[in-house]
Length: 594
Image 1 (cartoon, rainbow, N blue to C red):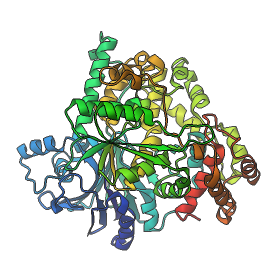
Image 2: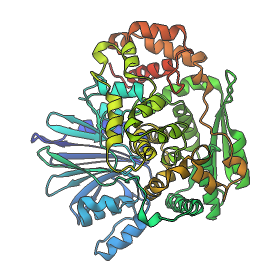
Image 3: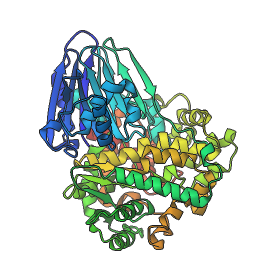
């Protein structure tokens, strides 16, 4: 985990180094162990470093390689960097460090933009070519590492977080109506390239962009599983699929132990994180540090799942850390979590992740997390409904089961000048569902969830909340080879046993049955679910503030109705509508957007 920033000018002037310094300083939580700047001709780069691989100063960034004429900044981890270094040495390259950043630079020198095909990991990087003045930007296959862009007259700025771009100045902070529509429809997911701000965009996952000195650029999407059955898998039984998926997950978990520091696990007690613990224990890892969080019960809702996380920790004899957060901490914690968000996120577990990360960072710098299994292996309740419909009906069915509300509903919530002129959220779904390559209705839905919805909701959540405490989160279920294999797996095996059936079968090979066959759980956060006490007071203050009134995103009568009955209005998927509305306004105010 690190933070990168930079600027390239197209108007013949030098980069605004002070602006890049401000962006870099805003990224300090992502990289508390080091700070660096570099500027040459029209390009400036900044970096904040979290020391995980090559703890010496030889791994500092921005990293310049005189032999290749390249300078780069990098965020993430290349899990196969040792193998690549050996291969590149065999091709004649000489190394001055043991860092994965240098491997990226040498790989680019050797293979050009095709270097990304060789990288197994999570990453965002920027590479400046000294001789040509060209800038190359790239993002990993599943979008685990973020890269935000601000195109302004005469220049392009980029950074690992949206707040860093704001710190640089000059960003158009008007609300993007398309993004607002998606935020309110898609459970706060704003799909690439949009963000809630008109002046900020995101580089798409699995994309490499080459920016020429005159500002022209070209994007290349270098990876996308096709979500069809493969000839090489013909004749495989359910047991065969179970074994091959479990073996692939073993490889993914092992890859994510690569570090020069200790690697722990965020253990919720659910199937996904418990499998990670089991596979690490199976591989012989001792004294594995595991971490769980829970909250006080409220409104009749239980606030923790310690029973299951304790069971797993005891079974595998981990060094377990249990954090119980009292409700009176939530109000202050909420503000910290919102400040850590690169974009507004309404899921309650964002606060839980932020609180958990604060404590975990006191013990380790790197953790593995179980994020992503539900999207990849059909773990959510709406997948059977999607699998049962013809392909031409699927966009509407998806909207019915997934959307928080309809286009018509939004017209009663949002002021006319903030309203998109058509149903852009359903249009997004329809376009993705119509893309060739997915064999069945479920394949199309999983493709959309994995490569669009997941990237800009749960994946972003984990990155933002852990990064705010200088903690690197690794997600083995998003190993690209595991995703490719899961995409080819027959849909009926994924839908079995109420969802994730094939993973449950794999879990029974290595886990206590009680963990595998338990009801599906979530990060519970009762005080937000039920708009209780200080959280409700914070919400009222935000929506009643002069900034909110002047901004005028929502119809005043609608806001008044929500505040009169704060726990009554619910989205289709059960989220508190007042929370969704207020969170957007709190985020804007927290980040100084007038």
